[in-house]
Image (cartoon, rainbow, N blue to C red; front, side, top):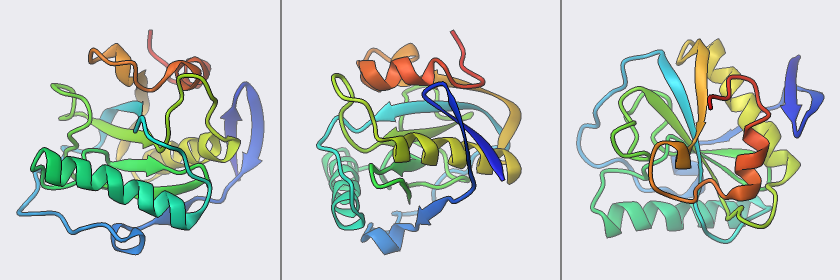
Amino acid sequence: MIFVLVEGDIVLDGDLEMIQLKDWGGKPTRGEPDLLDLPVSRVIISHTASEGCESLEVCSYRARVAQSFHMDGYNWDQVGYNFMIGGDGRVYEGRGWDIIGAHALRHNMDSIGISFLGSFDKIKPTKAQLRACQLLIAEGVRLKKLKPDYKLYGHRQLVATKSPGDELYKIIQTWPHWQK
């Protein structure tokens, strides 16, 4: 059983549902990706600044849109995020634990990028999203992909952006490992 902090409340939960790249209809990675030197010391939280989603079908579609934006628009080898979190409480694999992301310019070499599917300037993410993110981070520590003393950042702390949106940013500041 894992203790999870959700908006200041401790919730007992242990179910982490991961949707692999092929299962959400994602395109395979192009070429040979660069690998992270694991475990990494930082988690960077962002949002996709898109419409949200609350079902496997719609969240898979939103993940494909983000992937297309990155791969077709920027000619990247894969979606920039290591993981995306749907409003349905599922984790959608992007680059995964082992591949260097393209989520925070000049900060990708030692971090895992987790992006919430949706836009959180005025609305809060779902409780299922918050729970899934906490479970994913705990899994990263368990798998030794993240250092136990990892540091948590909002995207806006490292890059000139509004991401992860005001509402999500307020919430993650209450989480363990938050860095000012």
